[in-house]
Length: 241
Image 1 (cartoon, rainbow, N blue to C red):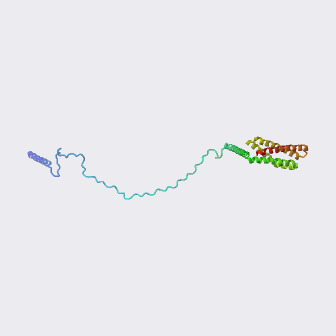
Image 2 (cartoon, one colour):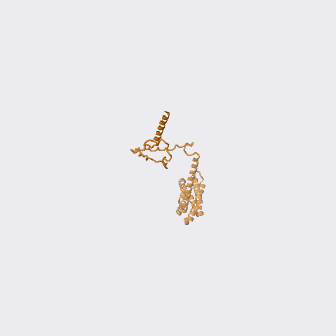
Image 3 (spheres, rainbow, N blue to C red):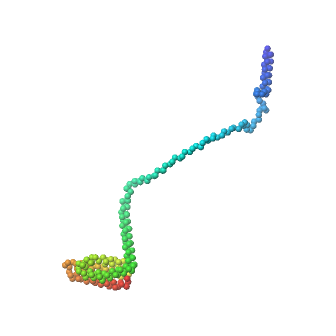
């Protein structure tokens, strides 16, 4: 029995071995594959199938861009608030006297320059010299003679009205003397000053009640002598004007 069992087991073992040794279709080999039978490794793995690249998703519709928000006008910057520096914004107190003094100096300078320019213009012009000469002749021939010859009251009134003419002639003569020919015109300045003073004395004595008549006559004589000096100057100056 044991021999028979052994024989059966041996037969079964051989059958199994035979089945495993054959290359049946669809039956995998149960034996360890030999190294010679294994496929040669390739350099790169064989890609059996190219991966299908799916198409990019189709954008069905362009997104609508909404209008940009309307920017309103920028706020107008108001004037920066003035900083309070401690004063009321007016002219500093120390500057007021400086302005006043500067204005006075400027006005004075302009007045002096204008006065000097007018004198120079008169002095340079022959017309001014001729007018001065004519005025001196008129004072000698008419004005001074009438004042001294008129009654005392009338002579005093005439003198009060016309005395400024003698003063102005003396000023013009001084300007002519500064511009040229000082000797001739300085003589006229002296004559006009003495004549004006003598006529003033004679008029005052004649118009004063209770005054000494002899002193009044003497004052008139002195004034006439100065009139004569003026007449002599008019003759000497005639060729130079």
